[in-house]
Length: 561
Image 1 (tube, rainbow, N blue to C red):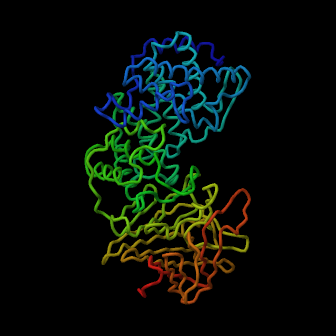
Image 2 (image 1 turned 90 degrees about the vertical axis):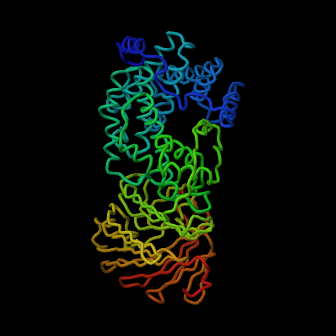
Image 3 (image 1 turned 30 degrees about the vertical axis):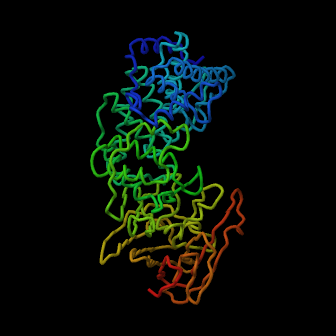
């Protein structure tokens, strides 16, 4: 069926040599008097009723069986994986691709890890025929993932793009890594373990070797895939493999990154890159999961204490959806509030700053870094501002799709040519940060973002943050016919008050030029194919010959500073 004449024999040999329970579980034993365990087991028992709740996985049942030693849980896991494999076999018989290959094998990780842990932890509940069929299916999946041009099902060629099989910075890669690792450990396959040890994990380590600061160039939504990476790496370590210093550092850095990327009200995070799940970057299980897993990799030190503090302060005190209940089995530990008021990740190119750690503090995000991922936006030089609510934020959070990537939706200097908006196409690697007289001074040379565009030869942005204000200075050089438009997107309707613009609690004060041309756009009036702008406004300033300077104050222009 899978197109390999010798496949069954090879797999049976591998499986017979396998050591029992080679895939380590999330935890080794149930914590005493654990609310998290009771909640998780109730979730599993609900699935036993014959109608599994949304998001329930065979892996949940297998883990519950491993920890509670209840046969019924294993039987449930086996039936779920058997259904997956059976449906795949039917598709193959019809010369179709099975579900596991969908969306460029994006879901191969969770699907194959379900199979692997069930085979490993519940193997005594499987027949020899099931073991053979499952193994053949898993082997063919991995062959197809890592050899996309030769991919096949049932002897019929089904090549695919090979998207991101060599890009450890992309969320797809982590799915492929998960599929390979869990199957390698469950089957004790020397071939796949060697691939992981000699090629795939070294690829990850190499990518993050010079990547400092945590976070992801995919942004704050797709960057949550690092939670998956940490879980895969944690499993690798618990299986007795050697640690990778670059991943250990990434775990520590990631804790600090997310602590600082969270707004002071602790219910949202910075809106950077595509926000495809929900457009508004609200706190969710994935954030909590990532920090719990990062802490489990770095349980000691200041970062771990900051992570524990964050876990107790965020709006999500425990997982809100059943598929993530199992991660609350990981310990939180003792917390410590951070002291430092700003954090910069040169790896991701994201900076976060605040005036304090209270919930009414003023908070800033700023982007200036490497632009090399599809889910990243043309937002080099863009900022967001928050105090108790969004004061200035990308219009992307008010879109239906959450994937508006253009410069027009971000808080930045926009360059317009006669043919339309000039797009960013390159990375920025020049950012200087200085603390002086109670202010944080941020200076970015953003010219490289327009390296391919002859009409924009210079853009430098300087932000002065502190004392309840932000002052932004932009210096630019453009050719005749190209216009530089200073823009800020705000959630509340702006209006003119003398020379100022007021948008809710935000005062926008043009300083240079003193009297620019001011226009206000209501985003819901914009018609764009396949997109809906549900709310928000944009303020645009025009008329500067080479320099804009604008002061932002979260007091509604009540003071003259």
